[in-house]
Length: 120
Image 1 (cartoon, rainbow, N blue to C red):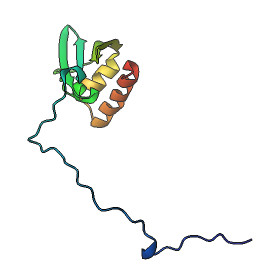
Image 2: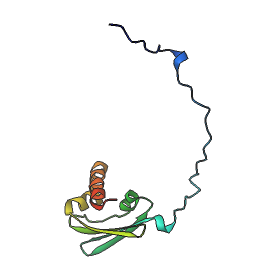
Image 3: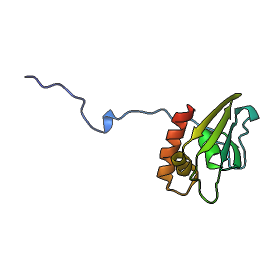
Image 4: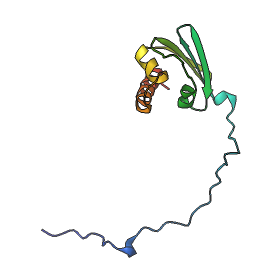
């Protein structure tokens, strides 16, 4: 059997990249404005209380909602984006996982589940 010829390894065979391209990055002082139409608005109704928030992304809007005293009950979530409204019922496990006390990993797992339920 013949051996296949492979490219020799060495400094001469490295990939060549074009010179760096300058990219303008906004400073922390410069705020990127998002039109009001593009914001995602979330309304959460849980145990007679109503929580509202809005953000550029779904995660940002969810993380702005803080429920004191725990969130171990069924809740209703309404998401408004681009003129569309989605209303769903969240079970107590998802509500507590997202808005109760827990690790960031558990919040990420429940966030993924809620996104799948809502189709966002």
